[in-house]
Image (cartoon, rainbow, N blue to C red; front, side, top):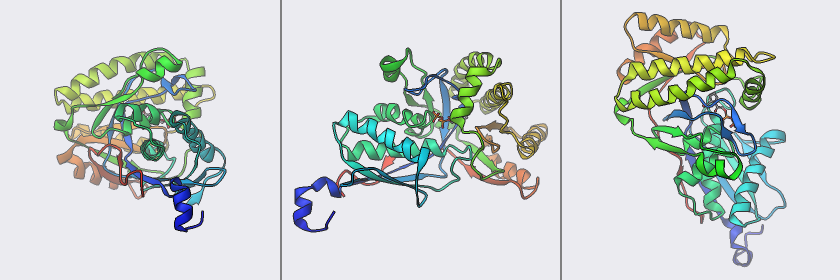
Length: 345
Ligand code: 2P0
């Protein structure tokens, strides 16, 4: 648009923008599998820790153009990455009864698409900024449900600290209303997560495709999902009683079980690399040395090690000794998604 005052007065929305920041989360009880693909309704509930590293900053600016423009990490997005954002904006616009297109500019401080939850921080930030700029009056629960429709795990990044994403009940609209994340108490646990990045590259099979294939073909999927429901109950109790070894044990078995279910998919999905296994071995050795350290792995080769805050540097140093293929970063509990600017620029 032109920058004249007259033009602004005629079309004030053209100057509106909102900026939001959100952080990734790492699930200690994983989300793996949808019961309703269209609504992003999970088969099981999950529980995560929002981190204080690798934020995503997203600006949504209303524009006069006839299409949305999406810029990710400084590059104009095309294809699937563009379509995912446009579909998300379409959902927000439909709810808000608005039609204006937007320029979305999003930057990840951490690696993108490498199994370090960039889609979680990305859609949590996008939901927060887009809801604001399109005038949706959304509380945190509603934002969580909206973020879920961009990427399931994003529902949890709306909240800081520990969050539980409820599977909810039913499909379609009923499921949509009942499937949201909420914060749970757990700050006293104050754990560290040592993020062992062994590969910055984007993964070969997207987590979306991998979870679809696992659900559809893996004979180990149902047993994992059943055990995960029990893990969630136990995990909540372990966090409530501030029991780090129990939290770690449950997280590690839940993640390894998820990877086992993927390995049994047809064809198999194997995200674990020799470097991932080397980190897993080192974590076992640390435990033998008396350090309460436990591994979790998302849809990628990078391993995240849960431990007490006081042990984080020792754990990180042990991983560095493995060789220069691993670059550990220490994270702690981080904040929920937040608006940086309001609706009006
Ligand atoms: C999680 N992951 O709970 C699990 C564990 C990866 C492994 O959520 O299809 O990007 O967009 O809902 O959220 C990654 O999957 O998948 C994920 P969609 P998402 O964090």
